[in-house]
Length: 204
Image 1: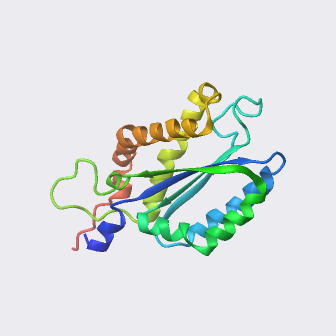
Image 2: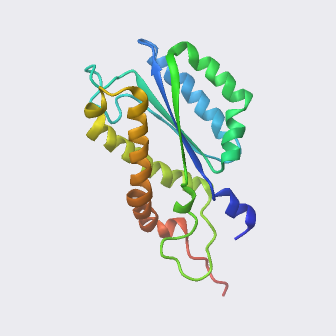
């Protein structure tokens, strides 16, 4: 395994951003945020981005699940690549375009320590294998995070609805980290091991 390949997957970072969208601005916000996610995809180290709508994983629409809260997930392979995106003019332009459609301050939660999910196969023996390509890491990360967040919103959405925004986000993201690290990610990497780490074809 080359040193650059190892370093690239050593410290992946996932950022969960929560925004409150103004009434009637949801379509414009979704379109604008979609362009921002597309812009992030062009940056080095980008692993994935996903927009979570208020109706995804909540009872929503009845006023008890705060249907104006939207969540966005950005993932990069290193903190340095995340910082490069966060300091970029493209992100600044995206934030300026999103601002007219939101109210209040955005809530940002950074999650780290995900690299060990894909460092090498679960239970691997002998020499370390080459880590999977970034697009496979992105696919498996999304396969784990999306249903986990969805299930947590279904189970805890109404219970946490009366809480202030920041404590609610802190609880949900902490649960996502715990579940992904000790429950979801180990099973996904085990189930998808042949796809993530295909056996090299020996020369005849």
